[in-house]
Image (cartoon, rainbow, N blue to C red; front, side, top):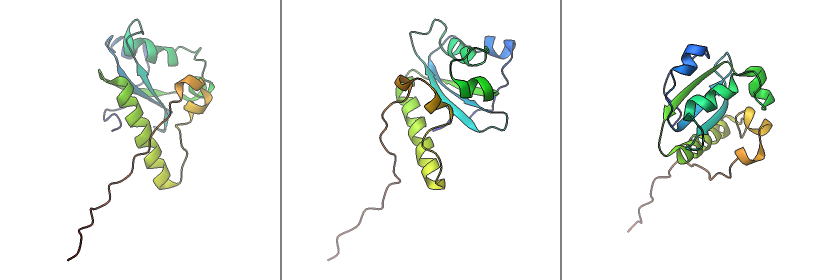
Length: 132
């Protein structure tokens, strides 16, 4: 469920190349450690381009992103809210397997409205067949 694209370095050209569409994005530090999973909806004037540019403009209100954000990747997706929730649930499931953290590092540092209530993804259990 994560975005399966290479990381992009934030330059003026790479930000301008992002289309004005809705979708989801990931931000990572220089080593590729995921910091944030975000979305750009219909209220953003230029969709993904606006949201991603905010994080690399030097005045991001999120201290973790302001200090550590080094690369990004994005995916156009009309179901951006659902896709982001799926990505966050996948992150939590993967981290619980490793005994890790519940949220990417920049999420707790952000606005509480940006931290949704999530369900839990579980690996499916094989169905038991009745004996007899």
